[in-house]
Structures are given as C-alpha cells and as structure tokens.
Length: 457
Image 1 (cartoon, rainbow, N blue to C red):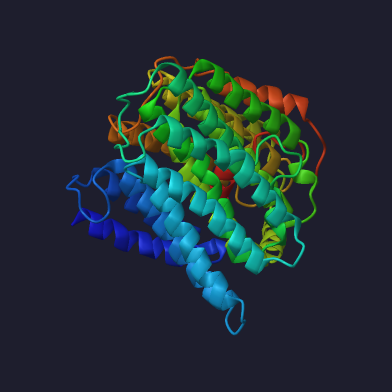
Image 2: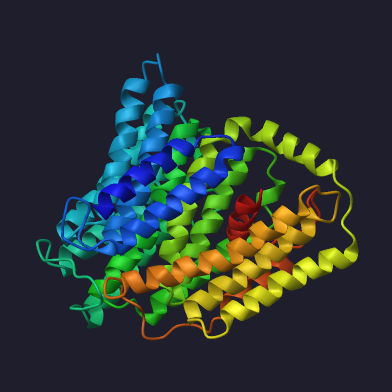
C-alpha cells in the first residue's frame, strides 16, 4: 500500500516538474514524500522491486519518464518525427532502468549496450543530419561498451545471478579486469576527460531529448560501478584512476561552465561536472552519497531542461525582484554566513564520513550562494537564508536515511577517504578557477551550489 501511495505522490511530482518556478515547493515536497514512502515500504518482491535500491530507481525513473514523455508529446505534436522520437524516448528510459535493476550479467550487458544503441538512434532521429553528437555516441559505444561487454562475457557467467550487498564472488585477475572495464564504461558514458564529449554535444538535440539523456542515461555509469562492486571489489588502481579522471574533468570545466552564453550549453557542461562529482564520490568509497546525488541530479536537471524555454524570462523577473530590495548590511551578511557554518559544524559532529563530507560541501555551496546573492540589493534575504539552512540540514539527513535503507544492498569499500577530503577539493578548485562574472566568484564544483540555489530561489 505504501508503494502504491509513493507512486501516486511521485506522479504528482512528475506533473509539477515542468511548472513555473513558483510551483517548486509542490515539486520538492511531493518528491521528498514519495522517496520517503518508497524507502520505508516493506520489501515483498512485488511489481516495483524487492529492495530499496530498486524502489528508488523506479521512483526516479517514473518521475523522469512521465514528465519528459508528456513534454515530448507536446513538443512533437503534429511532426512526423514525433512518431519515432516519443517511442524511442520511452525505450531509452525503460532500457536504462532495466540495466540498473538487472539480476544477471547477461541482462546487464545486453541492456547496457541496448541503452547506448537506443540513445544513438534517438539522436539520429532528433538531431540534424551530420550532427557531431551521433559520431561521439558511436565512439562512446566502441570505447566504453565494447570492453565491458567483452569482460562480462569472458569472465562472468552470463546466466549467473548478480549479487547484492558485496558477496564478492570474483577475486584476483578476473576482478581486476572487470573493474577496469566497468571504470572505462562509466567514464565514457559520463563524458569525462574528453574536451567535447557526447554529453556536451547534445545541445543540438530538442529539449525533451536533452532532458532524458542528461537526467537519465548519463547516470548509468554510477549505477554500473555500484553493481559491479557487489560482484568484485573495485581495486585501488581503478578507484585512483576514476578519482583522477573526475578531478581532471572538474578542474577543466570549472572556469568554462559560466562562460557559456547559451543556457543549454551551460546545462550540458554542468551535467559532466555533476557526473564527475558522482563518480568521485564512488572512488572515495561513498556510494550512497553518489546515489543520493544521482536522484537529486536527475530530477533537478530534468526540470532545468524542461523549463529552459522560460528561463530567460524567469531570470529577468528574479533580477527585478532582487533589485527592489536594499543592500544587506555587512554585519547581517556575516551573521548569515556564520549561521550556515555553525549549522554545518553541528551536523558534522558525530556524523558518518559520507554524511560529513556532503555536509561540508553543502556548507561551502550555501555560503557561496548567500554571499553572492546578498552582495547586491536583494529583497528576500530572510527567505534565502531559511532555504539555504534547510538544504544544509535536510540533504545530509536524506543521505543518512538512504544509508540505513540501502545497507546490505550496496557494497561499501573497506577503505574510505577522510570526510574533509571532498570539501577540501571544492575549496582548491574554487581558488584555482577564480574568475569574475556578473555573479562574482562562482564555486568551481557547481554540484552543491545548484542544489542550494534551486531550493532557495
């Protein structure tokens, strides 16, 4: 019964996703309630899965599929290509979910490659002839999916069960090869390292197609690594390689994102940055943090793409509202910053490394949003501060609840990095990519800043 109620609430959230920004409280409240209901519902092996991970994936995919599907029907109404785009959009969502929930390696391998193939076909139909994105998706399939398919076919029994909870039946060279293939596939799917990856090239695709790819398909690499970790622990060499690829990508993109003048270009590069953050969390030994960010990024990025048509008007209206305010005195600005920091320090004390790391990043992001917004006349400083404090307090609690719900389903590495490593990296990236914009200095990893700014705007 709780699962049915969660799906109903999620449907309401999906209906709210393309709404104007004034309806965001409805979206946030409905999705938070749906995720909470799905996590506490008893596991009975019913239609929506028998574990918390399956329920979470289906819930997020359901919201994404319903909202993007409805938008696609409107966007391509009356167009001949709509007869292909809409069914292919549904196929991409279904295949991505099937890959994430695969119970055997045969299913995982086939659905992973099928998701890439369906993505290529969708872009072939939806983008102009000769578009660069088609070629880049083809290279992604060859470079990323090929080694994974070969490794799983040679090393892993194709009809064998895919375990949960870290039973680790594979060890030695087999585990090393499989981990390397999975790491390469995840890096390629997320668009890391490449100067211009398939993810960044999707700006030429229609809005609904961009939404489903950036909010859904790109997340597959994180889920793949989490599933592979249950079969064979990810070796230190591959964790270091994954962390290195993520850090290099973050450093390269940090000064570039806000220089893009087109909104979809900013969103596309932001997606690669978000995937870097997610894969970095996995490399550091925090898979639940990556899953929580996966869900949040999917819903947030879908909303941003689907509402991109009215983003210019909404941004202009926000500036007009802010201009009606008065400059906040420096003492109040400092007190607000102190309140954010003190709340973060209170939550970090006694928290797990995963939760503490996320809290540290959110404190930096919320502090950045507060300081840059109140630098100029701002008419809703009190509401902004309350929203930022709610994000700093609420998001880590959600991650902690996910950790409890997914314990025994998600394999956690035996060694993890200190909690302060991730906030420290954010500070170094911010200092290394300091540049002037209309919004003053921007935190290099826009990951947490997007979450904080979205909730507070």
